[in-house]
Image (cartoon, rainbow, N blue to C red):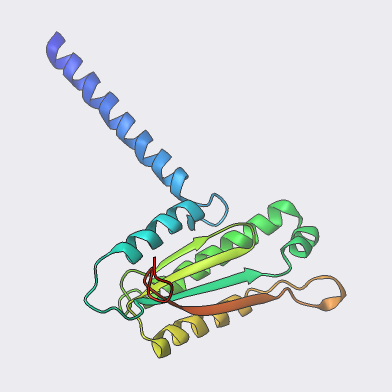
Length: 172
């Protein structure tokens, strides 16, 4: 009985430690406000994708950057807690756009790089399909704009660029 009880305590402790490790890994790789991947995780994923062998030496996909240009004004207007709640909503909607496109574009990754900057890794999509995804993201984000002082709405800035292999244009 003592051995059985000890074995059960050890199993319970191992489960608790496993759950704690999983929680810490999520915290390490996730932005606490938006729930999106954080900068560190995204950069590691980008390196992994760029370092992966590919038969095609052409561009492997695209990167989409978007920035909330008026985040300080949003913070002032909504307060810190309100701005965080709004950013969490932005994260949920952006993640939904990525999830909707996921079956047509495996490997999509979205992350929050810092306070106002977000990035989407769009591997294995040609230009027109990447532009369509970027358009869907833009439409989603435009619908989430906050009305600020003097009735103007916060602004988003967008960029879509082709992802290239290291050394493709600049030999290493």
